Image (cartoon, rainbow, N blue to C red; front, side):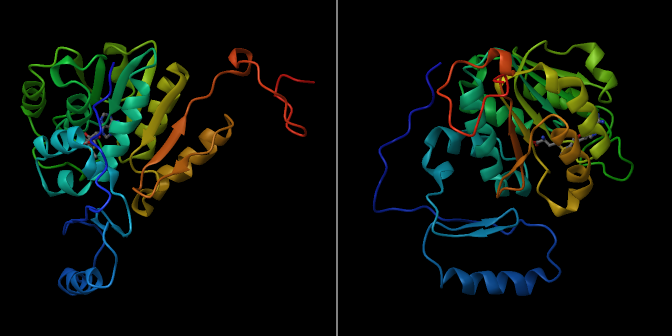
Length: 279
Ligand SMILES: C[S@@+](CC[C@H](N)C(=O)[O-])C[C@H]1O[C@@H](n2cnc3c(N)ncnc32)[C@H](O)[C@@H]1O
């Protein structure tokens, strides 16, 4: 498919973004006073929100009009607004994966804003891939962690949001047991956002081998200290398979699936770096 067009880059304008949604701040009033002062000292191109304070950026996400529309059209709460950069990581990973064989999968869907933002960025109701969404929906399986609205009838509300998207298949139930209700043989894009190590490892056990070469896995919580138990579980799991997660400044982690060595194409040998199949 054709990707959304980027407009010519205005060389004399840099977009800045600031929101008052971050987590782990003990004195928000003082914090945002300091942020206001900080903004007077830094160059344009700042991104402040979602626990990021950075400046001098291109902020590419805000210059991609198709993304801006998909993101703003789907904002349902403060967090959806603040995590724009995380959404752009998903959207641009999707630009890569949409050309691969296999379906798209999100484990941990909540209201469906992640799926809908990606689908709307790449064609909306004409999004060209099957997109699976696994969640318990009506309750959070980790006691005391329920998000707003998670109660009887919630699943139906999320389904209604995708009424015009026949390619979106929402599966209600506890991961990994729910995979028996339906699960793609090949996965091009896998977004894991469960906020608990047990569910995320169970997802990896079930789906990692189905991710096609070149397929992308995004772990929403990997680089957040608040979810350190997930990193503790996932690092050895990936290391045992010869992978290391790329920690992103957004708090996400990313893994790109390799070809198995026997499917890897010919390449010029580099002295000192033999191919795994070379003896
Ligand atoms: C942070 S929310 C997902 C947010 C969503 N990815 C987004 O982009 O807006 C986490 C979700 O994971 C779900 N969840 C956690 N563990 C699960 C499990 N073992 N099986 C199914 N759903 C699970 C919760 O019900 C919750 O809706």
